[in-house]
Amino acid sequence: MKKLKLIVPIILLVSILSSIIYIRVASVENYKFKQEELIDEKKTENNTLKFAVLGDVHGDIKKLQKAINDLHSIDGNMDTLILNGDSVDQGIKLQYYALEAVLWKNKNIIPKRIIKNIGNHDYFDYDKGTNKPEDVQHFIKMYLDFAGEKSVYHDTWIKGYHFISLGSESGNTKKLGSVDAFLSENQLNWLKQKLNEKYKKNRPIFVFLHQNLNSSINGWKGLKEDQEKELRDILSSYPEVILFTSHTHILLSMENVKTNLPFTTAHTGAVRYAIMPEGNGIKNLYDESQGLYVQVNGNKVLIRGRDFAKKDWIFSKEVIH
Image (cartoon, rainbow, N blue to C red):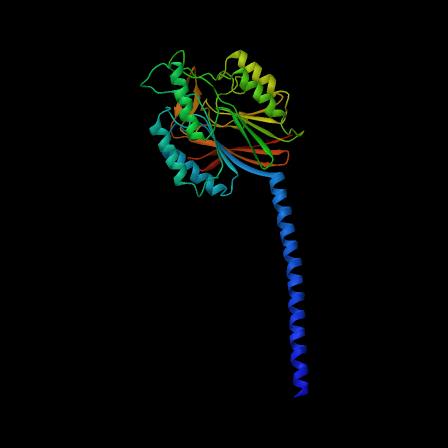
């Protein structure tokens, strides 16, 4: 009986000590796991980034849906999606509502963060004709409501990388069909400040503008000559810049990613339809639907052209800073 009385406390003591040892070991292991998890998150935050750039949807909901499905099949864990202007064909509520409905319907398979930039068609309403100054402000307000921004130019940071969106502050004011971007001095001064913000040598900086530079797509002007020169001069101080432009609908090829300037330019293709030069004119290719998928690792940026209609790659080109 005495032995039994002694055995019970010993068993209890061993049990308690075992529990303490288990908890300590488990805590250490859990701590190690948490540390590794934090290290992985930090590594991911600092070194890897994935995003897609879609230009010129022009309110084509069916083709946008196909592009979304195809991108999700490629990568279901992208960090952001950029709609680089002319997301609607006309800046009217009905088209914005239709676009918002598609994005809402696909909220579980597209990135939570969507950057929405303004294009020239966002200033168009074919029933109105030529815009008056108050019409321009009306179109800007509709865009801002859709984009959730306070200005047609805006920026954000994603995983330590700077995304800077430029946007025309006017459109279709002189004649129906005016497409040139207008960037005010305020916007250009803002751009200078933003490019220098948290600047790190060899760290890629992603800049977006719907309209293209003539020097990036020869023969296709997206800005007046003096404005293009001013913008080009500003960006030339930062070789880390990759400027993504849309607007022309030109078919994608490796030649659309250019490093002939002090910075890099990349044409995004068009979701709605493509254009192919033919003789002295152009041919519209309505069966085509194209865009970009971008992978970033440190100072390396892999830009890949995607054919959403054929679900195939068009090109891959790496830019290293």
